[in-house]
Image (cartoon, rainbow, N blue to C red):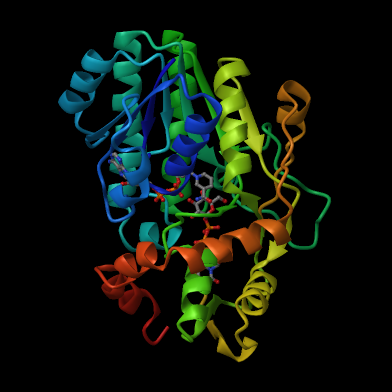
Length: 339
Ligand code: NAD
Ligand code: DAU
């Protein structure tokens, strides 16, 4: 199979490429990535020179560039990870989120139509469902939950989901969509909660918890997400949406305390800072459909996944030290100074 992976120099896309390399070494992988601040070629260094792998620095909004790559590679399958992915950045600058996440997805689907792919898979998020109240633990997001977004990021992802389903109904493009909860694991960009807290703790810096730290997320180890996507791509039904999540709800403050224990730093590093605007309270996925249809279940327990993740950041200091010493410093200053 010839698989075009967009956004493969980012966190989940890169983990997916490594998953494919391990599980399906016969596949040809073409990675298309613009290399924004979140894309990192050093992440792909071990596969860069493999015969069955090609990297193309292309913007998914660049229609000509995207069509040229399709013409050259004729992919069977497209898995679209490419996106602006950070909620806080979307609150500061929504425009690029609309451009990449909506227009970029439409360009990829136009090329997929023209070149007749057998599957276009859109990697989406549980944030399209909005949030759930803290006092109703019985409520979970199912695939039938109405879309009800909170941030420019989640709104752009919801728009892309709707567009993808419209390409299925209108043009018969064989689309699947997966909506996943919060991922963690190796190669996650330091702006996100878990790597930010690990890196700050290792550097004895304050650990900035938004609001009271009582917001709840449903955490999934990235490799479990990659396995789910692979199942949906190979065995899922076109026109269907699949929720992916771990029944692993945790409050932010409890995660940060676990990280302190794991890296051997005091909880006195924790500082409560001004809350995120429009901050979603709780996400919780019901993964019953993907379990029943494709037999998928998460395999990594949170304690084990977090330990592996902390180990990875300890063993790969050069990877994140290069990032945090670059333009990330300005970002951090802007978002967290006097917050
Ligand atoms: P990320 O920010 O780490 O990586 C995004 C990648 O996309 C980067 O390599 C970046 O260079 C690339 N990219 C951005 N704009 C591009 C463009 N215009 N053209 C080509 N490439 C571009 O993101 P991530 O956390 O790996 O998320 C991947 C996907 O999964 C996103 O679609 C996100 O919405 C979705 N998702 C993420 C999570 C999570 O917890 N991280 C959970 C559910 C869904
Ligand atoms: O649910 C899936 C989504 O998970 C994905 O679609 C997004 O791409 C991904 O970024 C993630 O979104 P969140 O906003 O949930 O993730 P983030 O790591 O930014 O924040 C997790 C929680 O931690 C959230 O409640 C905000 C809080 N937080 C975050 C940061 C960066 C803090 O308290 N302090 C921080 O410094």
